Each structure stands twice: as structure tokens, then as C-alpha cells.
Image (tube, rainbow, N blue to C red; front, side, top):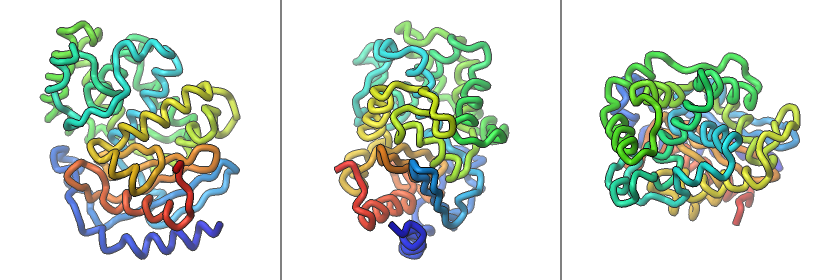
Length: 304
């Protein structure tokens, strides 16, 4: 398959979409990001890589980081994690308080904010310095030792983190958060402020296209079953309230973030990351989602 030609076609077709949508204005630091940018990277399981546009520009991965924290928690705690977080689509906004009261402080899934806060709480209790462990994990998966988080973005998010504080305190009232809340929210916003490139993201997500094996060393980091489960949760919960539309249009497990990245997995074959800052009303990149749709249409590669 001529992936280089396909990427060139996709870039040409999505260019008119780069002016659409809005950047994540509720995070002041992200308001400064120019919308007229696009990057895309493909990494096959054989190690071949194809890139176009600004695929090597560092971007704020935001909620894409929740896949890494979820995988790290699942690796450490196994099936015990499901006692504290569910695996169903929420049907509500990613930072909604509404369902938590009815469901006694158990978030619907690990990718909405309350679910990721619970995952962060697990890691906070497991590690003395949990952010260092997350960074170590991401650097190992990406092969990039220079990955870190953006302090300005983290501080910007913390200034406007009232809803996340409320979610954490509310879950603590049900006994589903153990850590000190300010320290927990600091850790949560720090991992959301991690910066990576599309190439880094595509390389890292090969953990999930290669049955839980480290893409560089082949070491088994997750069981094949765990990798399958993480892909399944991405498929059903990975794109906020657009998961059904994304499954219909694109047809692969994926995770998005309000920084504009969308990263997808085609098990046993490849991983793909696209980035464009302009978001739709659900917080997903308009151009990146369209790019992945065009990719699966042009290649015939999807899980369906």
C-alpha cells in the first residue's frame, strides 16, 4: 500500500477544514495555538513510518494521556480496577457530575474526567512519584527520552480546575478517591499537559496494536487480553460523545484530546495519529477525525 500517496491525498482533502471549529479556549494556554496546522503519522507493526505536515511538532496531548495512565494502572492492578471504574459510554459531558450521584461515585469509564481521576488516584497510591512513572512509561513506549509536560499548560489548567476538584471531592465522599485532592488534581493536570508529536503518539500506541508488547523490545507489558480490553474501551468511550459517529465513519479504536490529537489502532497492523487544533462541539478535532475517516476509506483498513 502506498501510504505516502494516501497521506498526500488526505492532506489535500482536509486542508479546507483547518479553519473550522474552535481551539480549547477553556484552557488559556491552548487559546494561543494557531488552527491552520495539521500533522499525521503512521507506524506499521513492521516498523515502517510515514509522516506528513507537522507530524514532528510537539502538541498538548490532553485526554490522550488517559490511555497511558489507564494502561499503567491496568498493568499494575489487573481486573481490580473495575471495582472503582466502569467501562460503559457515559452519554454525558466528559466532566459531568450528574451520573456520579446515581452510581455512588463510580465513574462510567476511565476516559471521562472522573474516571481518569480515579485511575490517577490508583497510580498516586502505587507510586511515590506517579508523574515520573507515567513519563517513564510514555518515553519507553515512544522511544523518545525527551518527552515531558508543559508547566505553563499545567498551571493554566489548574487555574480553571474547579470542576475537576468538585468531581474528586464528590467521589471522595463515596470513598472512591483516597489521595489528597489538591495533589491528585495537580498530578492529573500534569499528565494531561504532556507534550508529544504525532510520531511519538503513533509509535507509543503500537503497544495496543501488538497485543501488549513493547514496540521496541518486544517485552510483554500487558497481556493480550488487557490490550484487547483497552482497545475495546477506546472503541466505545474514546471520543467523548462522538463515539458512535466515529465508529460509523472511521471504524477503529481511538482516543482524542482537546489539544487536537486523535490516535487510532488497527490491531495486528498499524497505528495512526493525526492532529489539528480546531475542535467540534464535543471536543474532537474536525480535521483529524476526517483524516482518519479518509484513511480507512482509502485503505479499506478498519476493524469492521
